[in-house]
Amino acid sequence: MIGAGQTIKVTLTNQIEPELVPWFHTEAWVNNDGVTKELPSTGGLVVDRITYGNLQVGQEYTFRTWLVIDQDGTPLDLGMWQDVTVIPTAPDGTADVHWNITPEFAELYAGETIIIFMDLRLSSAIDTVLATDYDLATLTEWFRLESGLVLDDATLAQTGSEAVGPVLTGLALSGLGSILLLYVRRRRNEATA
Image (cartoon, rainbow, N blue to C red; front, side, top):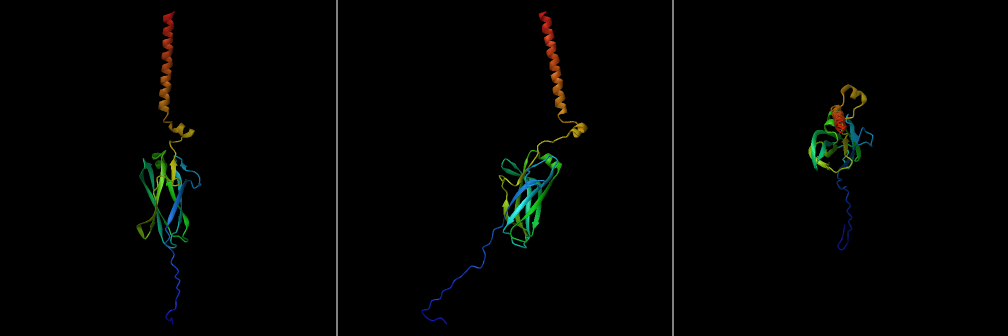
């Protein structure tokens, strides 16, 4: 029993860990090589590697991803998106998003830089966004589509080139110009003789 005039010293310690804020960052590259950023006009595989942290072990999360292009500082949604579900076994980890880009898509957006927007959501409450990455100026979450169609000799032999018409027109005009020049010189020589 504590008597009058005695002092009791009490030390309190916080046994509750502060809530950790989930985070992620990503990096995209072509054909899963970790280096290449330009996709050929024939299309191919783009891998977006997600590195995440501070997720609750056993909780189901959804990374919602979609493709945009920068249209004068405004993102233009290209209508391609996908969800990737992750149930972490550790608070920090990685996941991959695979984008199979068709030749038709690559041709339609040839020369464009495609940016991957992403957010992290609770799967059980899909409208609850925990973290986002909507930065048009990002340097890691993009890939570029090769501009122009590259044709090999066999394709040119079978289909011809789109440049054949202009080239033939140029040759024809050049030939006509040469004939006209010869005609003018001939007439000049006849006039001076």
